[in-house]
Image (cartoon, rainbow over all chains, first blue to last red; front, side):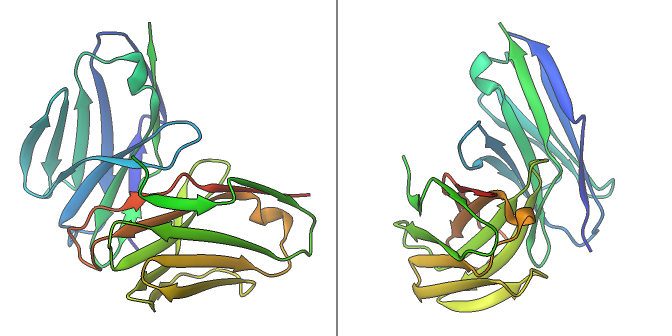
Length: 108
Length: 114
């Protein structure tokens, strides 16, 4: 069964800093990956998807995928207090499996 | 902009009672899901429906049962709740039962079982 592990569990970065979130998955047949963000009291919301190896940039967010290494990451440049949230990666083979989550706190 | 709606927001009940949660999506999606988010914030899939048909039924206790009247609605009933059922229940939808489809989540229903 697919296992999706995230690290670190929690992360504190200063405002304006770079946040780096990591995710490993176990099923080599995984093809599609997402990063979701969940603010307190809300449901998760998709930030971005990545389906091909390499980097994908959307504004301040850059996702990186290396399927051979079973690894996907998310980098947040110029972090803002509004980025403080719980972040999930998700991987899909026959169904979507969500990772264990990373709690990001951006300190003003 | 909310397109997946859940009611109620919050529900407190006693052990052994029955509860029902409602979910409606206005995105025109064919697939809907129920997830359970526990106190450690882990997201666990419970059920998936595609065009009113159950396609995924994870190992959940029999007291949980999904109900779909049409592809825009997916409700969740829990007969005889237990303390371990205390959690946030999240409803989601996606365009289709396809590998590439992003899921859209509602705000969740928080259940507290006393």
